[in-house]
Image (cartoon, rainbow, N blue to C red; front, side, top):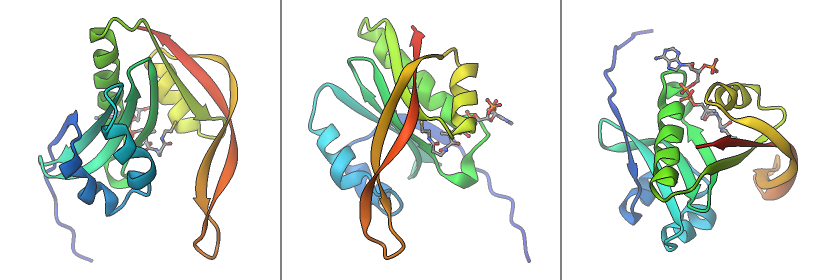
Amino acid sequence: MKKVRLRVDAEVRRATKRDLPALGTWSGQVRDTFEPALERDDRVLLVALANGRFPIGHLLIDLGGVLSNLLVLAGFRDQGLGTSLIAEGERLLRERGVERSTLAVEKANEAAIRLYRRLGYVTEGESMEVWPEPLPDGKMQPVEHPSWVMRKTL
Ligand SMILES: CC(C)(COP(=O)(O)OP(=O)(O)OC[C@H]1O[C@@H](n2cnc3c(N)ncnc32)[C@H](O)[C@@H]1OP(=O)(O)O)[C@@H](O)C(=O)NCCC(=O)NCCS
């Protein structure tokens, strides 16, 4: 095995339609979630770009005060990118005078819950989130995920 040390700088910015093809190479959310969100003026999709070129993370913001769809590609985790995406999402909410940020996180997702707690989110209640997951034959079907609802005063 040969190892090559790479240098990756990541920047977080608003996504545009031109980012979607590259996102679509690894994300299954583009057609049903991100494309419609970019058509709305009450949604902002943030992307994290590696070396200014390739998307390695995303966060969707409902400007009413809800964060969702936080994801950082596996090879780029634990380096502060998830924290930066949330910080930028919260900044956009604050800028619009929104006083509370809310999100839902699967109860089994310990890493994400720890991250949100560290950033000041507290559990407010619970919900049943539903999102599509692949069956063994590759078909997608909606699956229920018991989740915590967490909130932060901005
Ligand atoms: C949850 C998720 C987005 C976090 O992204 P991330 O980029 O790893 O987040 P961060 O790097 O900011 O924080 C993760 C941990 O790394 C630590 N960290 C941050 N910068 C660091 C650095 N430079 N060096 C070492 N550790 C660092 C943080 O302190 C944090 O530790 P904690 O878990 O004890 O709080 C990512 O794990 C992910 O995409 N998971 C799958 C999808 C998912 O679960 N999304 C959430 C749905 S609700």
